[in-house]
Image 1: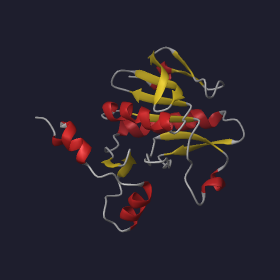
Image 2: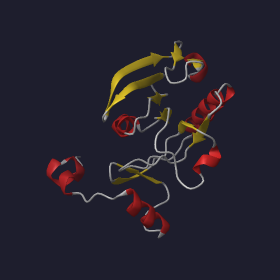
Image 3: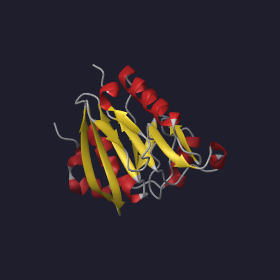
Image 4: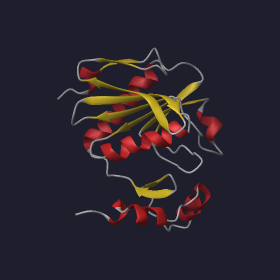
Length: 188
């Protein structure tokens, strides 16, 4: 069964929501808390499975171990862009937590999404992150034991997409010290 949103004419007729409007709708209680704004569209986030939660915590712990000064890890917290406010599973941003008391970061060095059941949506988010200048974007696909690494953002796309499988070493260009043996991430 196809969705009404699969029709291009319907998709073009959708009214976009600005980041400001999104905030006001949230403050008024008119939208569920479990949402994010992507390209002016309010999207309901998927429920987090135990595997999802474990992977996110594993990745946060891994990144925090050797993070250089001047960077910090945010877990499931918003990033505010021109027409989007995603809440990535993991983001590495510049500065310290106190820098973001009055506004969310407007970009990130690294963003990671864990896609247990949301691979298609998370791949679509690559356009959002590239447009915001996020240096490197990872989509972790536990069902396939694969990590897709998007790098070299240009406008609303990444110039490079690489896949790393279980047993390979994941090397990040955005954080050269951060190397991960994927057999420790995909243990099953």
